[in-house]
Length: 285
Image (cartoon, rainbow, N blue to C red; front, side, top):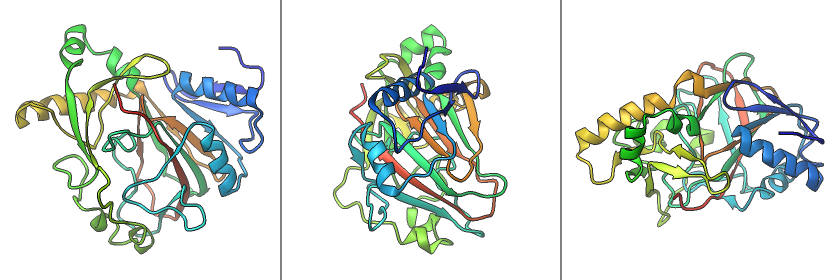
C-alpha cells in the first residue's frame, strides 16, 4: 500500500504497524483515510508521543463509529465514554491479562478499541496482539470446513473456564479504585452466541473468532467442546501470528476486535494508568 500523508512501519511479520507523521487531534480527512486503511491492513496500529485531551480522544474515536459503553465498568465522571484503567502496586489483578477480543459477550461486540497511556511502569506491562485472519487461514481445509457452521457461547461474567476468579468484584479486591467502577449491568445482555468463524464486514476476510469469553460450543457436549476450544485457543496464540508493543507515556494503540485477540502482560508491580475507548460493532456473521 502507498501512503502520502503518513509513514507506516510494520513491527512484526504478520500484524501491527507504527504510524509516524500523524498527530491524532489534527488529522484532516485525507490523512485519516490513510490511517483507516493502514488499520484495516495491519489490524492494530501504534502511535507515539501523542498529547491529546480526553475530548480529543473521544473525537478521534468517533471517526471510527459510535462509542460503546462498558456494561460492567463506569467511565470517567466528566467523560463517561472513557474507561480509566488503573493498576496500583500490590494489585494482584491485571485488566485484560488473558487472550481475548473485547466485548465478545455482547450480541454486537466491539468493532475497535483505543488505549491511551498516561502512566506506565519502568519495565513490563507490554500488550500482545494476535492476527486471527492467520489463525483461520493456517487451519487445514477439513478443519475449516468443519468449523464454518459452528457457533460459540460467550459470557461476560460467571466464567466456567478460562478467566480466573468468577466474580468481577473479587478480581479487584486489592484495588478499591477499580472496584468502585463496577456497576450492576441490570438487564444489559452479557451473554451471546457467535459464529466461530466470522467474516470481516469491510475486508471480507474470514477469521477465527474465539477468546477467554468463549465457554462452550453451541450444541456440543462439554467434553467435545472443551477439546476443540483448547486446541483453537492454543492455535490462535501461535508466536508467528503475534506482535508485542512496549508502552511509553503518550502511546496509543488502536486494534480491530473483529480480527485480533490481545493480552495485557502482568509482569510488573508499579502504577499504570490508561484511558480506553471502545467503538461499537455489528452482529458477527
